[in-house]
Length: 406
Length: 72
Image 1 (cartoon, rainbow over the protein chains, first blue to last red):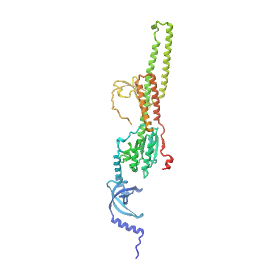
Image 2 (cartoon, rainbow over the protein chains, first blue to last red):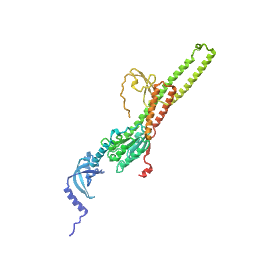
Image 3 (spheres, rainbow over the protein chains, first blue to last red):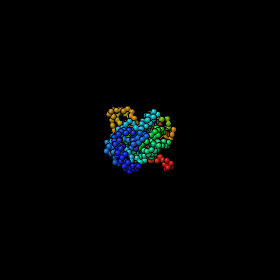
Image 4 (cartoon, helix red, strand yellow):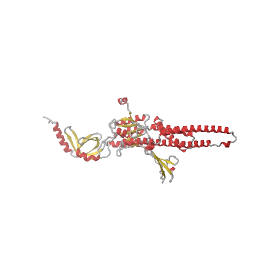
């Protein structure tokens, strides 16, 4: 008796025949793992129910048709197709033709469970969220060193300048990503001087966001002693990290824009105060010096005959002394005033005007910074970088107090 | 609390003080000496605030030192 000896190809051929006739078009239910699209456009993945795995392939022609389903890691599906053996590797797989999303996958369930748990602890509570300080100078940045995020962020910050960025390079994908990201956030939180932390990632919708749905990352953000801006998920894919952050924006550029705008606004506010300071001092000085010179004039023209009981000599003497004393007082004030005038000139209060702003002044030179100081028909003037415009108020439309621009 | 808080409030405090000074000077009716001393204080605040906001090159520093990376 001689047992039949198969060649490997013979065996494979026979198994293929049996399996594909037995399982020619069946439905299988499971969750997608290791989803990849090959260069040739075929989609490969593993279906699993947690205990067993089944390799699956969707050939390019079908894969295109199924693109709208947005198959991805963790999705639970039912797939239809025949079971076949791939002879070269001796691996059996399902040649998938139809896919129906089915229920919620394990990953999605985990996301929902974690979201519910953290929400019940108040991690996403709006009332817990802090205002992002403005202006800031020192920023902690957590992102991948190889993404465009770092470049976009710095490029946008450069518009305003004057920032220091403490960069924490991390992987944003892969097994180690969550712990690396969490560690970076905690480490930045311990540094002195950092005013805001930005957690972000580069563009590319295919990127895997799962690291930002991990509990340690979400907690690191929520527990950060420094306010955190996140720019991770987009509108359809908001991550738990985004929900826990103090402010969620969509791109690293948007985060940098916000910080740059804060700096611009603060600079303008300081410039305006500087202008008002100098202007107020100018007004005081011109008023005081007018008063000084008129006092001096009165003293000069004192009529000596009113003090007729004094001898002419004595009177002349006294008058002279009085005059000299007054004049020296006037001189010293004048010196003080001219020193101040030089200081004022050095401050160049017109910097605001050079940037295209105009300032409204009343006829007596006071700064008009509110409609409440105006009346229809009032004559005012606008100070611009190259001159003064006389104007008359036609109509006043007062606004309710606005929020700050930033 | 921490130094970062004090730095932050120091910016806001300085802005608030400067605003108060400007308003007082704008009201007028001050002694010249008083006005001058307020003006000097205000000028100093403007300088300090401008320094805090100065437009300088962006500085980038790595959070991890070499040791840190090796120890990872």
